[in-house]
Image 1: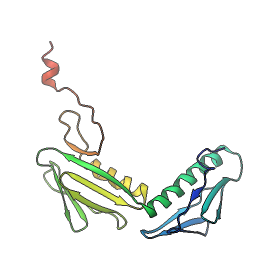
Image 2: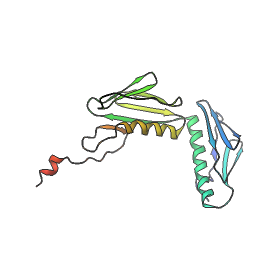
Image 3: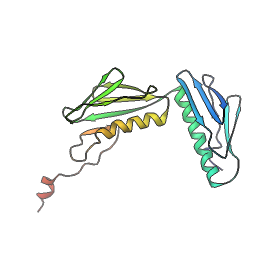
Image 4: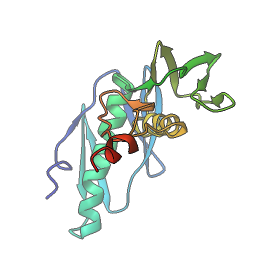
Length: 181
């Protein structure tokens, strides 16, 4: 039995769920999300509860059961509350700005890096923080990772783009290591 898969999802009244060609369509005030039902999984929508169950007892069916429930829960949460990630920029002269909906990063390269987000994603900049928000959890994470990958934090001075609260393990430089001999 899947501990996560057998838990019901309470669908709020603001979100409507309907089946369409082997996929679930979630509609809410913030938009719509389509979720393809994984193989070996059955679902039952009664009242305000959404229940998932495995068709058989194979290893793949049990794995898909928990995954499908987690994906559906993320869809409901995204449509009611939304998801966001915050990135911090650290470094002398490093900054971010917005040009319309596009993000422009000046992070030590000879040219500014321009990132064009998808329509579902909203990016805002405040001082040295970049906030990425949207209804799709995986898309928010993917865009945040793409922004972070432009200039990953380096371990010697800590310069770069990092997630808020991320700990960067610092290393000693050559000068400190060479002085011990």
